Image (cartoon, rainbow, N blue to C red; front, side, top):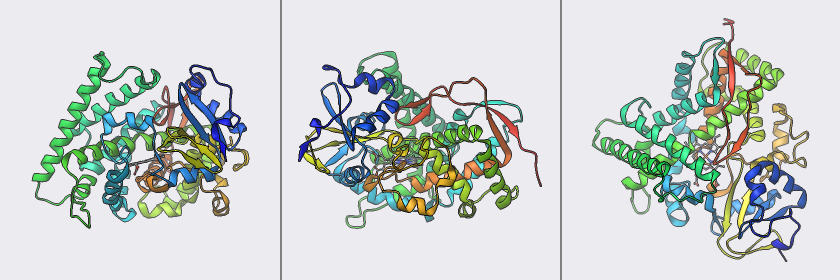
Length: 448
Ligand code: HEM
């Protein structure tokens, strides 16, 4: 056994460790770390960190939720998401996951497919040939509307839902500015942006509680996510979620359920514009299978190339590009000793572009995703949705949404990048384009 911090790693500053490299360009820095070995020691100030590059180690860590708990970065989210699924730990997490898992069963979420296509169709009616759009802003708006409709059966424009959407926006800006300051300016310090943040959370809470109260008083049947969560009951104890936990769950689903998918689609539009031959092949498949009609959930399995495009796009631009755990006790990873408190960093960006597993790793090649290729790929390599017991609960929902939205839009419009507009991946809580993505819309002539 060897102490992980005796292994070779990149040079670090005596006081701040690797802080500067990790803040300046984390994706590039972590990719370079790949060359040091399977597990790479780093330091952020006094906090010991190690980056995992071996897929077996990644699998081990993600499977063992007792030894490896969520890291500090996630815990900061608690001021917004409380004790919802994403941020909870231990028994509380297990109880919630058992209750929420059936709510996300594919059969139960399939009917949201219609909502997804309907809202996309609505958006397309506002699009016109030749217009310039920030496609990232459009995708954020669309996926937020969809998730709100799926949670509350209500339109974003309607009263409380609008308040919740606005509050989420303020909160996300707050998080971004705190991230830039490395969370050094705490939320209780009475700076204007902190006051705005606290007010936004208070307004969001009020709106969500009001939606929950109304639902409790409602007599007619609704089968949205809120109702399903309210009705979920522990089989052994009969216990249900109280209002506080419902609030946390709803805030979690709204945040986790829209920004990630919006990013996945935004990067896909960028990649399609940069690869006209892929775009043509995609359009040909859509034309052949759908023949101009709107897609439905049953079409997804008949659109293999569309599915491959989404998979390959999430390989190159994983919506969650860095995540982590923290060792709750002294432990081992593979043959290495890891002290309690060590932050374990896992990066989809680093793994998804690893030359050992992907030929020509920087190239956008949807065709690489054959069944045989997937079968031989070690488990911890391609992990856009994480893995182990805490794997994304919305994976099925997100995959369905990405394919349906892509199929609906790509049949009608071609999106070309605005020349000279800077597209900069910003690895925040999710990997988003820092300045958005400016595109010019080109309406495709109706072929039917
Ligand atoms: C392309 C879209 C998405 C991506 C790439 C994504 C990615 C992820 C990842 C990597 C995790 C694991 C985090 C960790 O282990 O620390 C996660 C967890 C989670 N995601 Fe997603 N997600 C997506 C869409 C969604 C959607 C649509 C929903 C809900 C409607 C959702 C809800 C959640 C929740 C609640 C968790 C926490 C699960 C738990 O800890 O039990 N996600 N997601």
